Image (cartoon, rainbow, N blue to C red):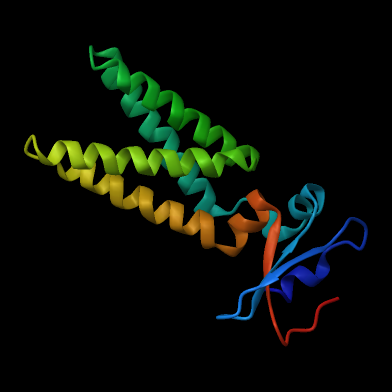
Length: 158
């Protein structure tokens, strides 16, 4: 992955983070303009799929709320819409909203287990956790949303 990041423009700043003693990896922090200007900092089909997932989930929650569902569905829809918009605009706070969305899905799963449970709630929780894991650890999401990329000891950097 770092080989692809060698095309990073010289202007701007590169800031090295601490070395992880286990993996030898180090985070290289760059400016927002540098991250978004690089091909790895742009959205790909996986990120568009994640954005669509949050938008569709918000639409379903808004529909349930509109048919007389609890007010909590309205706020869940707002959270989903804000998450989708934030991810589409590549802003860092969108990751916090995605984590909150996954956390709420897990909480709803725990509460629904006492009332008989639901496979849809289980699927929502599992997918939410997988999305958060990708957004936190993936190379592309880290460059797009957190303006950093992973470098390993022994790799030549320019």
